[in-house]
Length: 309
Image (cartoon, rainbow, N blue to C red; front, side, top):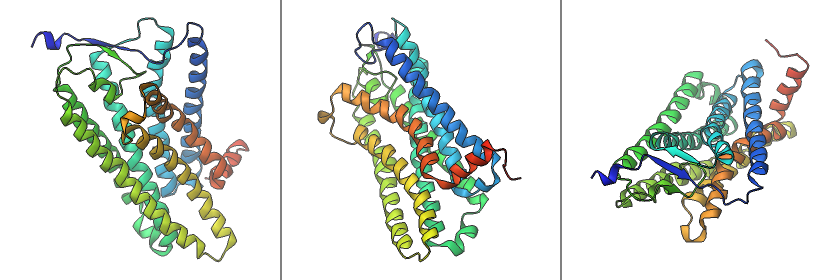
C-alpha cells in the first residue's frame, strides 16, 4: 500500500512541439484566452448595465458567460505556464482540483444551455403564459439547480477517482488533468469509473441534447406559424444564436466522450479538448454579439452612453 501512494505529482506532456513552436502557441493561446475573458466579460457587463436585457434569456446567458470564463480559467493558465516551463509538473491535489472544476463547469454549461432552450420554447410556443411561468423566482431556482447538479456530478467523479491508487507512471498525455487521461495512470481497475462517466454522458449530454432538439422542433413549427415578418426575424435572431452555441458545445463534447475511442487517437483527443475548453468559450460571445440584434443594440447604447435606467 505504501508503494501505491507515492505519486505526489504528475507531468503534463501537452502537445509534442518542436523547440521553436512553444512561443508561437503561447502567443496564440494567450490571445484566445484574452478574447474569451474580454468577450464574456463584455456580455456580462452589458446584461448587468442595460435594463432592456434584464429578461430570463439574458439572465441565463449571463450564467453561460460566467461558466465560460471560469471554464477557460481553470485549464488555460496552467497550459500557458507549461509552454514556458521545462518541468510541466502539477501536484496531485491541484490536478484533482482541476479535474473537479473542469467537470463541474462542463456539466453546468450543459444544463444552462437546456434552461435557455426551455426559456425560448416557453417564450415562442406559450407567449401568453411566459411571464407567469418564467418568473424571476423560477429563473433563479433553475440557475441554482444547474450549478448544484453540475458540482454534485463532478464530485461523484472525483470521489470515485480518489479511491484509486496511483503508483506507477505519472505522465499525463494531455495539456491539463482531463479525467480520462488521469484514469489511465491508475494502478487498479477503473471499470466503475468508466461506467459512471458513460452514465453521466447519457444523463448530461445525450438526454439534454434530445430535450433541446425537441424544444427547437416545436419552436420552429411555432415560428413558421407567425404572420409578422418582424416577429419571425426576432425569434430567429435569438434562437439561431443559441442553436449555434448548442451545436458547438454538444458536438465537441459528444465527439470527445461518447464516440468510440479507437476512432480518435490521443492527439485528436487533445485537439477536441482544446476546442471544447478554449475555442467554445471564445466563440460563444462572438456568436451572440454578431447574431443577436438585442445584444448589438445594447452594445451600441453602451458605446454611445445611452444605457436606459
